[in-house]
Length: 314
Image (cartoon, rainbow, N blue to C red; front, side, top):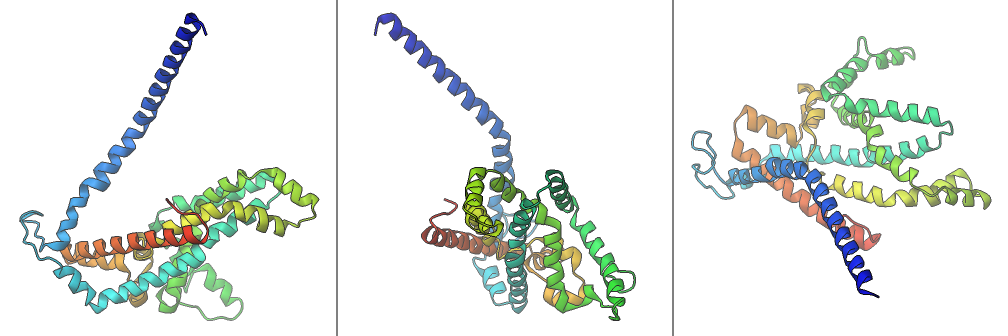
């Protein structure tokens, strides 16, 4: 290689490095707002965890309040009311895991079988819409639909001679209604990732399966589902990390005093203690323990997943 060619190669290499650095800078610049927001709203407030180990007073502030160690953690661990709401939380989360987690998978598989492309898009779009409604609106819809006097469900049951049922005030029905409301609101939105996975599957696999005489059911079982397994495991692990906590909006807007025994969960319990009774240290301690339990569950589930199927979050 001559001197001229060597200089040209060095110049080309230098230009490539400059372009690469400019590209990286642009990407980091694009990522910067997200990192800043994450740091400001998720990491800086972490110092507030120390409230759990103090008798916090708003007048003294976080650093001026006296240390009490594990007093608040020991208190709620011995509180019968806490274990009652924890039981309700675990039961509802278990139902959400069994039915709410599998519903988007089943929906994605069924929607994928729709042959007409236009109709498939309509179905997917309609399924997304409830996700954008607030839980206040959703709970209002369910209260109207299940009303013993004007509700559509009771009117349909009345056609078969069934007496009106007070759905929203029946403790035995609340958990089922809460889980169904969650499915109805989020099944379409949760299925988006599964739709993306299904769309990325090589169509030649289905063509080869058809040539071999595989039915649609066997194509789903041997091609579609295996392709979805990594995404299913990822979302399952993330769902398991929230097993000890539950969203506030859904339960708070659906519950009432008549079903409080089965609907009172950790989030509503913390709301009453923290905002209504101003027991900030106690509620912070509950939140810290919930986070630790969720972290331990996530790490354990990730290790089990890697051993059993060779896949995990990290």
